[in-house]
Every structure is written in C-alpha cells, then in structure tokens.
Image 1 (cartoon, one colour):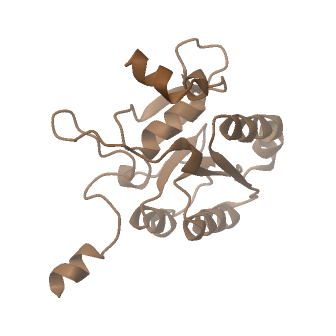
Image 2 (image 1 turned 30 degrees about the vertical axis):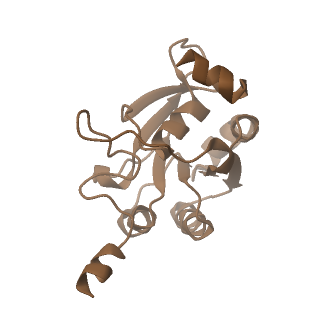
Amino acid sequence: MSLLLLCLGGCAPRGRAVGDTWQPGITVEHDGVDRSNASVLIVAPAAQKEREAMQATNRQICSLLEHNGMKAYYADANDLRSQEQAVKDAVARKVHAILIEGMALGDWNVTLNKARKAGVAVVLLGEGYQPQDTKLFAAQFTIDRDDPTAVPLGRALQTIIDDREHVRSQMVSLQDDMSQHEPQDQLEEQL
C-alpha cells in the first residue's frame, strides 16, 4: 500500500524542473507528446507597460503555435496575483507547458510547485523575476527576431514538453517551424 501511495505522489521529477530532466548518457529517448496534442498557456506580463508592448507579439505567438500544431491559450494578467491565478488555472486545464512573460516579483514557490507536481513544464519569457529555485522552471527564453541561430519557439517548447536536451537560457525566434509541415514519411527519410 505504501508503494502505491509513493507512486501517486505526483509527477514532479526528483531534484529537477519538469521538462529539464534530460541527462546525457542517462536519459532514454522516448516518443513524447504529439504536437497536435500539446497545449501551452501564455501568461501576460504583470506590468502594464510590458503588456501593451507585447500585445502584437502575443497575437503572433498564439498564431505561430496554432500554425505549428499546438493548442495555444492566452491569459491576461496585471499583477502577481493574476499571474499566479493564470498558472493555477493552467494546471487545472492540464496544459503541457506554461509560458510566463515578465514574471512579477514575489513568492512563486507554492504556485510553481503546484505546476511542478502536476507535471506541467514552466518556461519564463523575457525579462522579469526569476525564482532562485531552478526546479520551478525548465528554461528562460528570450525572443530575438534578428538572430538566424535562434530556435523557432514551437520547436523549443516541444523540446521542453518532450523533456529533451536543451539549454536553460535560450534565444528563440517567431519563425515558423517548417519541420512540422512535412509529411511524416518525409521526416523519417531525413533521419
């Protein structure tokens, strides 16, 4: 009975963030969540100035993720409390990843631990508060529209959702992830 309770303890990986447990030579490759089943909640920045500046970008992010086959949801926020509520709602909705823009300064431990225990990967986007406990988020993304080496956002998120190797601080682009538009048999031929 105690073994069963131990197994039901949650989806939180031991000592690592959800979506950031891959280790070379240790982690076994696996088939992750299909992109058509992946869902992402984008939480708006808490600061009004940032929120206004990100409006067009957020529309582009949602459109891009949808075009790349993911389900994208957007939650408006205007302070720490509303950002935390959006995260709690996302956990209840059972999304695969939460993208928090311009995280408000505050104690995020309880809220992000709920996401962690539910097995939901958290990614920070742009500037803002960053929790000291790195087990609470898988990565921090910065959008760079001019860097040709930046990873397309959809691909970067899919990598984290699938818990594959990635850097914790990553430049992403809002370019289309063209690898998601080829028929499956052509993708397999390229491998």
